[in-house]
Amino acid sequence: MIVDIKINVVGEIISGPRANWFIMVQDDTENTGGYFVLEATTFDPNKKGEGYDNWFENLKEVKQYLIYKNLHIKWID
Image (cartoon, rainbow, N blue to C red; front, side, top):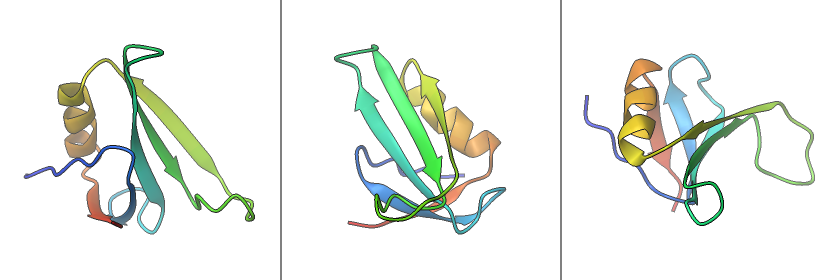
């Protein structure tokens, strides 16, 4: 599985356990030394939604998580 990771860019999860949700890999290396993976039903601050976050030490771990969860992402540039 080829995993394309974009940092600080919102993407739509097109398949996997949270299909039709949105995702962002946030670079937090200056504060925590790692990366947050934010998954939510919306990133619109005017809408209520459900969301989760995970923290990873490096991008290799982020990639392993995306592969493990079988997440296919369409990045919204």
